[in-house]
Image 1 (tube, rainbow, N blue to C red):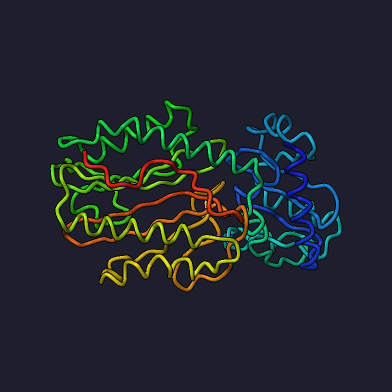
Image 2 (cartoon, rainbow, N blue to C red):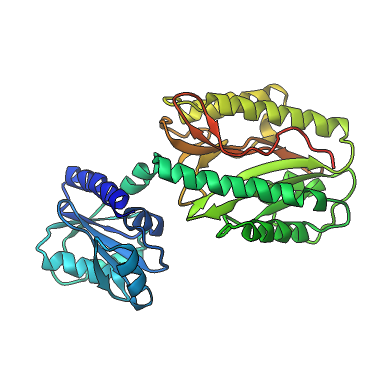
Length: 359
């Protein structure tokens, strides 16, 4: 997709020109992939405010870069940041913008000590801001990742039963996603059973699932670099009244959050709309994380939806909506969908039912 990547670079170059820099050193891996199409564990890009970009990688990925990025000049080096900064100096640049949120202090010191290095200035999250709005090709890739997640969850439902450990179930879910065609899991799968459900990011352990448990499963498949994110909570046996109560509250809060995720909506207001349902029932202190986040080439990316967050949603921005209630010592519930903000209304990419499944 060289044309797509070239168009993305052109938009980024406009932002670089507006900043007054001669060019930028792009080092965030997801940003380099977004602008070039290269998949590599070592890559960076020298992007001038005007003119052709230069893509850097090392010997291991030389042929891959030439094959997948035919429209780019390729620089083969092991230590990319100083090599590309030196090239900027050789081109007579006076100012070189860099991604200060990713470059370490040590790496910055190395660049600053180079002969004739241009003045180094922070670029900001320019590429990340562009990445928030997805094109339809990206949305199709994200939808496929979500479909693989739905399929894997459906395939393992029969295995969610008393006697199986959290860790065994997490491994089974991840293996099933890959067997169905995912590149890999989008992140480490969470399986939190019984009282462990009160820990939002519990690491699956050797606890054995038991009748009477609520079991929260947070999982996602990665497809062509794009990350799905889904959470469902199921009951092993008929739920107790308190379990049904908090499940219904979270389900209502989740639906409210989805409905509020429209173009122009303030991200803090979307969070507040969902959170109000839980707070009104007296569980405000039991929902301590943000409502959701953007998804794409990273599983957690802009925009962030939560208290104190700023910014407005736009058309074609994928986000998660994932409220929860967590009761220490007892258990918890979280329900999460990945959806795309659309002018015509939210497009939910996850199709797994949100009714409480009693297994």
